[in-house]
Length: 224
Image (cartoon, rainbow, N blue to C red; front, side):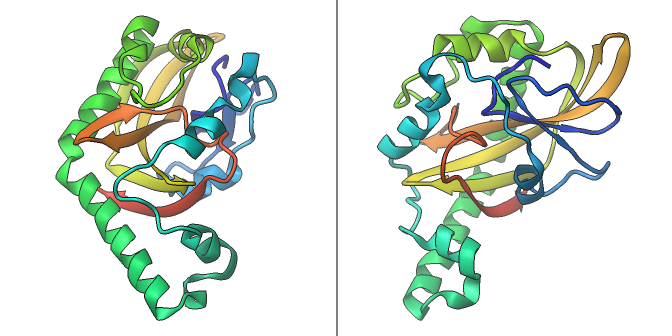
């Protein structure tokens, strides 16, 4: 496995894990929740060029709608929902409802963007993949190239119905999941590729804000 570390892979049916510059995690046969996947991920050891910190820079400069309530994701993660005041709980519940609505109201479009992204990866089409990224992010061409060409030969891709919602700073990141099969060194194996997305102006875009971004926290999982 030879791709960068902001998108991560859940390994299903192969005994040997090769840790490159992409995060890799074992997972059970059932699709895991985003929190399980993030918590079990091993961050890649290789981060070429300045893009090792680029996703954190992007996360700090963008503002998404719905905007995450400041500090509440960290508070819930560290101390639980019971630690919130009544006003905080109201704001948090509103954010949960708003992000769930974004997923449910735009599910077909989300699946379509994940499908297009996976098709570009299957074809090693870095140019197409690059057109799918959020316009307000600074991108690293080497990162896009590594995503487009860094996988073994993928024979199939199936977008899943589960979407993970995450937040960092003022950004909201939605994880689409695609279960793929590929052949590597003669071994056929099944994996879950996590495709991070942002919802901007009524459209879905790829983002490099993901598992390698400092401060990323899980919000919820939504079934489409």
